[in-house]
Length: 158
Image (tube, rainbow, N blue to C red):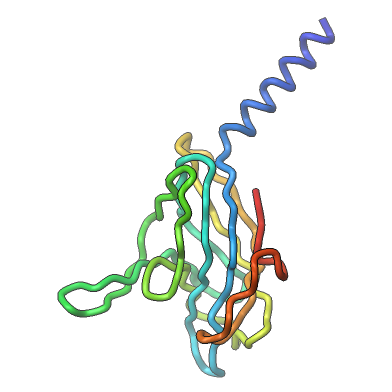
């Protein structure tokens, strides 16, 4: 009987871990700011093992953090918050300048080139279960070269 209980527990644990989408974050960075700037963007590549969506984010460096989209509308570039960003299974989703990104607003201080910015991404699976993904994004000037995959703390799997 004891062996059956242990087997059921192991099976349930395996099923639960399979239900959670595994999300890989690559090349996370935040645009460095000037002294009085109150907003900046965080950029990265996300890939989920299962259909999921990015539903929110937080960071201790900002009072407000939102998932945003930049798009052309009648010849005018517009930015707006989106309720979520689809992460189709197995497809890389780029968060980059001029497109989808994480907007850090009401900054509590300057984000300087070389700083490490903690960001928590909240991802929701098809089953409605949410998971937090903790990342550390390197701050850099917009034109600075990207770090190679695996450098620093920008590559995380959850």
